[in-house]
Image 1 (cartoon, rainbow, N blue to C red):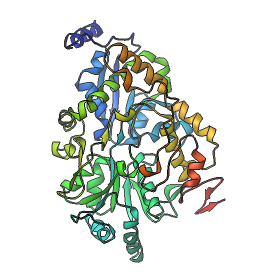
Image 2: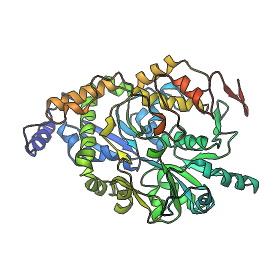
Image 3: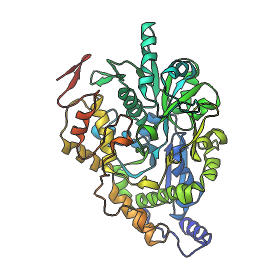
Image 4: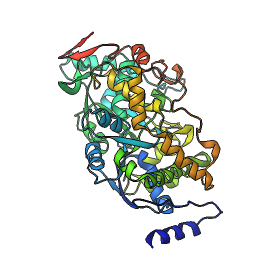
Length: 455
């Protein structure tokens, strides 16, 4: 009776003949976890706009303390699914850290992160940064401008510390990518040393996203890579300066995913489809008509139950702009992308990029053939589920046929060199060739033993 009532309320509120036709759900009461970041928006929107209810789903959204707690909650069944770091399902599946079979039928967004440094470090970097005609810094800013600062710290016997949110986070890999592109070594992992600081010029450590600004303000770290709104928060508090967005680092790079256990998907196939349908609708709403709904989305995210940051802080990046220094506001319309550019499709090539970075820095200790990367990607990223959900939405008149890559084999076209900070193209079909092209990092048969790279 409860499902029928929800379905009646949802369909009578619609303005046209299109409506969601509820599947025969195996489970309709669900709890999903998230971290307080703006890219959890598809979950919040699916809830607030009634898209979950349209599918007959009774969903509770629960903020989690950190990424480890969130992952454990999904694995042990306290959570039915969660807003996840894209690296988490992959790392769990290959047994790096917690071992479990996690899949994703839905990619939550593109871009959305930035790298911020403290005011002290920015003042030291500025003489090394080219300026535009109006005197403002020219973006993107290379880590080459940071290298003399790191040398100064080292000459004074001080470590240069930066924060990222989790060892298999996009933020860890983006920060490492930026540093390495500027000639700074971010350190290796090994089976015996999981600090990630072997041979490092810059020492990276884990800090939960909402704590990044306060940790930097306390002097524990000199900068960090994190998702919004925690870079803009540093600007508003006048304690730091974002020096590069990940859109500038790698145009339209993949970010978070929605993760569930393989067991959940197997036991609840219709529920999995229903959840995916609701999330796709939320992503469409977030990006439709040139982001016309973004201000409404910011109002939702600013609530304490979701991100809980000030409206102005969240709006600074969610509504098409980004503020680098106090008053230096620039147009970055694709800083957050939720549906455009096939953002929600779980591409194998996106998964493989994460796996290449795990291998590059020693989290995958031994060399792997290209076929291994493809097999792991296919076991975790599930475009088959995504396209089934998309087809249902199109048939129901709730989505447009032309908005989905029906004929994709799961691989994007290679990312061109001009879209990446170091000018190196990425082709997910050739992961080992890609690793060979990167100046700093493991390649070929190399491994890390004690504190040295072994060929």
